[in-house]
Length: 137
Image (cartoon, rainbow, N blue to C red; front, side, top):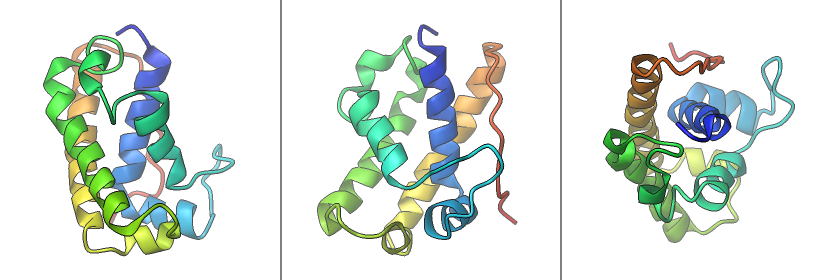
């Protein structure tokens, strides 16, 4: 993997997008876990769509940030986010986004992608540890 720091960011981003408890506590209540100074829905959007290119041309990130078998999962995550942003615009609060019925699609896609990415991190012996804050019950 060429860009390990981006791989770590991807792993963290997918965790954040897959965990509604985290989203409510951090994004809505701004009750950040130790070590997190700030977070909101804009952070994963900027990482996926602006900073990494995963939202527009994820194929170019194979071998750089993702493995080939992760491509469809990443596309599912970015597609679910993109469809919400297209439907509702970009000016809702984080609370409004995560309470839309379509948000479950983001949670599900992110959970599948996160699970695969973590499995691949272990399989390829990548030294990436994600602090899983606000575990779901």
